[in-house]
Image (tube, rainbow, N blue to C red):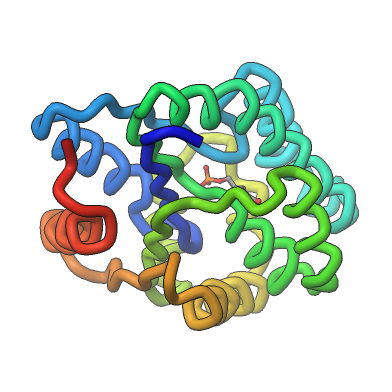
Length: 211
Ligand code: TMP
């Protein structure tokens, strides 16, 4: 894959990922970079259609493996249609959630065997991984409170219960520990501009001066 950079933002509900993606986009554009902002589930025509099936409706509408397969199908389409072509052109691709959300939500949250999830990941993208993953961390109660304030109908995961959300927070922290060359935990309890400054610092530290 050519020159581009692939940065993913992860974390529980209400962690401020979308805000931080937008702020980093502004920083990178100001530095003269070509930037593509995208998200999962979604980010391509087909994957957005699958997203609608995943984020709304009854909490139990999918069994956990079906849910993991839907996220994986969406991801494959997103990679083929959006992420890989942009990276080949040398863009900085900023993605709101990616593979670690599957391990955290479907693995740690729903209790699926992590080896099965790793097999799905391998099927979808081989050894391709983000250059940098920023895991925005904050207490579950605070995140859910912030997320509830957003409104809208995309709240299927928000309704999954406190224990589920506690498991996935621990999951993200464990992923960061296991994959510390790729992942960094960022304290997301602070004001957005303080988080933004740390994100910018980490991007420079890990990936060099944007150009
Ligand atoms: P969003 O709220 O960050 O836009 O993401 C939609 C929901 O999808 C969010 O609650 C987390 C969930 N999700 C998974 O459960 N597994 C995945 O692999 C991804 C990418 C997201």
